[in-house]
Image (cartoon, rainbow, N blue to C red; front, side, top):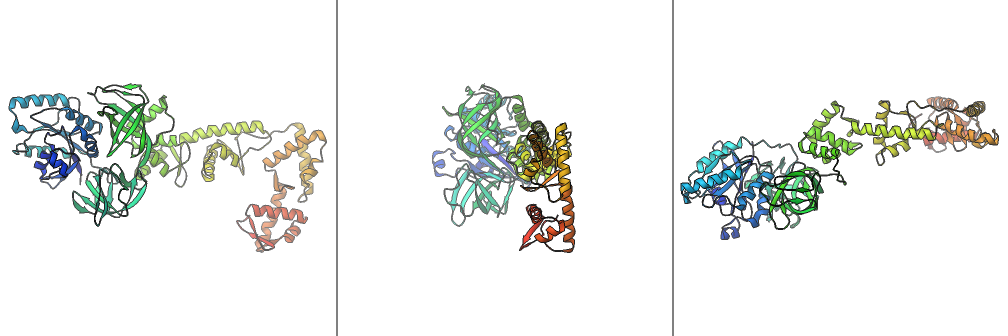
Length: 635
């Protein structure tokens, strides 16, 4: 079932409250002060039932200039506008201001109601109608139905009710699958129910028992009870005026302007990038660095406007800007807002939030502007692709949802499409990377390895742990390893055991180094398991050949030709592999191996047998059990 909210707007004392009461039978002036003064101070709420059983909520907002904050609080979540103009006064200052506010809040349909028609002559009514036509020119109300009504006599009420019913079809069905969100416009205690908050549920659905997050406090509380239009309900849906009682919440913790939402669904920020508009009929301008009053949902705060692609905005103009907020703001991409001038206090414009978690630095370059255009006009897939690139590394579902301001179900849809199109890749379960980021990391990796090869031409390559740290500082080992594996699969790098190298890289020796290597290979092959220590090997060469020995020895270690068992024991790989075969064969018939058994198996000394066993312990292939070793992770 579609749930629609109709909002009244118009100058003070133009008959909005009387009109709502005549339509619905509900008096929205609930405060004693409102009844005494005859003006609406707080937003009032009613509902109108139609013959087919459908129901629409009505928000009656204040018209007086001093109560404009309350008008803005009530207008959040409005689908249709009912602009009210009194026939005996015509278009007045707050009529214009309210129409500007409705436009900035993204309301795109409604009717104009001329009230108190019983108080004027036809000639005067014709003049008022002409003024309204001029007011509506270029606005969303241009060409919309114009209804003549008297709440006092009842004239015109049936036609108005029919016009409102006809407009219901133009309202898009709200997505009940989204995480729920309710901007709080009233908070009060109720005996037996605890703290009750009210507002218009603008997204999703909430049911009794759900856990709600109170923002920006980041406190959680279970939903104890729900009322919709004053009646108990198990579930409330987007578009309904809703009262929620929260269990375990102390008085004073929740305030008007807070947001009640599903856990983790809404970002809380102190900086937003926006599209900023200035009203067409204002005489004010917004300059770079201007202090403004920001109205978002039921929340009001000061903000500094940093214009991005302009230096000053005049009437009817628009630009991208950044708002630096004085308080934390719970918000989402696509949220509408209104701004009022700092002093004197008057509505000057509004706009839409494009990025709730922008980068620290403001850029006026084309790529940054293009990114804001994508966030403003792009679909979910385009925004997700942009965000994946902006994250610049390995990201999770939560990372992308927060940064792109999309929900989990949308994430699943767009990631599948982006993966099919090659825009993102799934590296690990729940871990992704964009193709653009992978390309950038590939180029960075080439530079790192090329520089390393130039500095150490006899080494097989850079240690993988070192490369991970330089390529993706701060990333987890698994994530960085997955990136390197993807680069290997794409032919960007070679990975050999613990070493990374360029695919076309090979160590090259000078003639003198080749001679040194041949001597080392001959010596180590002849000695087998009883290999000389590094110092003993160094002594084989004259003083002027020691540098070549050190370089070749290090190169053989790097290339994997030499296996380090201990600081004093180095075996040729062929010797090492022969020993591993013998150890493996031993364990095929035995549960454990002692030091003495290993010594006898290799026909070597205790020194070399112990070095091999401790090496295998270090690799977690074996593990000590008393005086013997047993297989742990295996050979």
